Length: 138
Image (cartoon, rainbow, N blue to C red; front, side, top):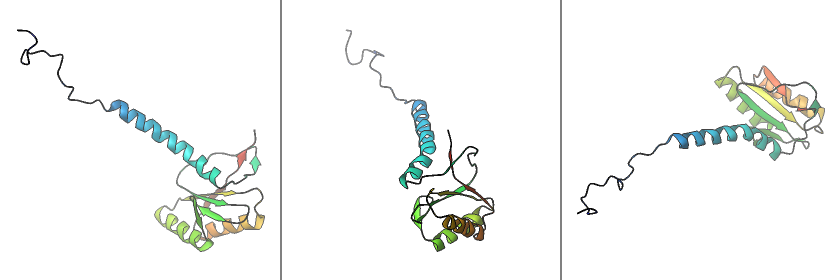
């Protein structure tokens, strides 16, 4: 009779395979969104008022990010560092990658001498290429 446990009905078979392609697509999109917004999150956390310039480009390649706040505090890749720590970490980065670059984000109200000192420190640590981060004028 129909409807018994051994009737051979294919409607009640369990799905034994899971398609992971949509999951991978969603994870990759989230990863891209995180990578794009990460630089803005770190920059906003230190409240640095960047100077404005009409012409400037986005840096590419391996970068170290140095932030100088208006009260003279130094941050390297989002972590507060002293000047000797900045020198040591920069030397380590140059030892790993000879083409390492530094992007210096200094507050508009930071002292000019402090900015020049940061430039001198990173150049003394072996960095030959650096950039000063600005905010583009609209």
